[in-house]
Image 1 (cartoon, helix red, strand yellow):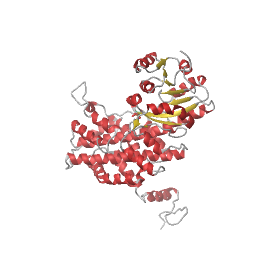
Image 2 (cartoon, protein in one colour; image 1 turned 135 degrees about the vertical axis):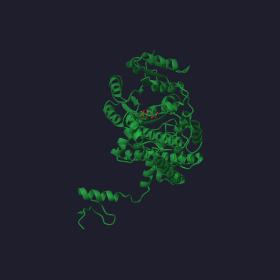
Image 3 (tube, helix red, strand yellow; image 1 turned 135 degrees about the horizontal axis):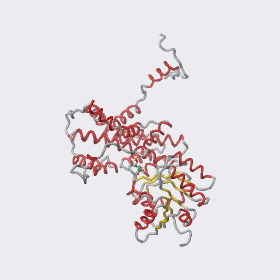
Image 4 (spheres, helix red, strand yellow; image 1 turned 120 degrees about the horizontal axis):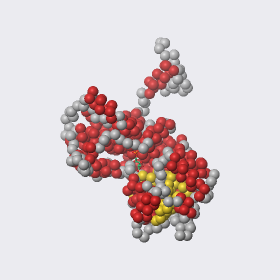
Length: 471
Ligand code: 6PG
């Protein structure tokens, strides 16, 4: 085989790497994949569509030698040390101008460090968030690349051809400098955590209100046909129908309630506090996954604080309508908090993240795709520099239309003892955000009282301190 034959290379042929590479090949590019595990290189070739050019090799140097220059190589390996190890083995094999893309869920600070590290070699390192799971990788993911904009030019035709499409607009775009791609993906995952938590709280309320799995399926199915149309609501409807293959139960009822996590939601919360920016729905979602792990203590506590019957006098239709509106409200608040975080981070970390493009890229292929993103697209079309989507007039209209039911649902959850912390915190954030004057003047007074931390006044400029309790 002659040199310089392949258009695109992939390092790591796990499920995501293989599927993404096959997707590239399906779009007319010749591709070569590397994995030390020969079972994976042959699985790649076996799965290739007839007529496409796909090769798997167990030797990294062999793969690199067979790439057209400037070389375009993506890695899909576990985040952390494996990414650094791949970079070290690639370094002697690459040349100035080559483009290396990390498509995993790396922390953006690692990406920044790697961009800097490779700068002097002239190798362009780009961090790119990839969303959509196995299926998305194979048939059309949403992709969030960031880094050197010229380097993006080299990979743009390939990425645009393999991305999910909304109409004919590809769900990929250049999303900013440095670690912006991975930053955007981190916040995407924070929003993913928030919406998943909100759906689970809605499920808890509806279940306690007496809905069976079949009724839950019907409810989520009809929600997915309306304002709440989204990938996560759609799969939730399917989940309620799934039967267990080991017992007569519905599968959802025999799944342990300990929720896993790989850390990206936690990173979003941690980083929000560094900026700082408030993302309490995401924080609550992370906290609830953590609490779900404390099973033994929860079993003891359940005995001490026994549950109560559902007492509210509501028809199921009324309950469903109330929860629908609360979920819609809180979902908007989750996006609002995530996007506000991106707005702030873009400025603080000089990433130049174009929010209208972020929203466009999220419209298809990714886990948080939903019809609400069309509403947000319109908001950014009216004002690309919107600091918080709650400040858009159309969004405000939607919020006001569901606010009454949201308050009722949060109150109902509190009365019925249903844990709905994310729903409640979306409302609490909203009520604070819409307050011209928050009660934090009292906190300033307390800080000055016990620590002489000083305060500002509303009527006279300057900084003040009072000897409290002396009059
Ligand atoms: C995606 C997802 C994906 C993520 C999983 C697992 O966009 O396709 O965000 O990248 O890794 O959802 O996340 P947790 O294990 O943390 O729930």
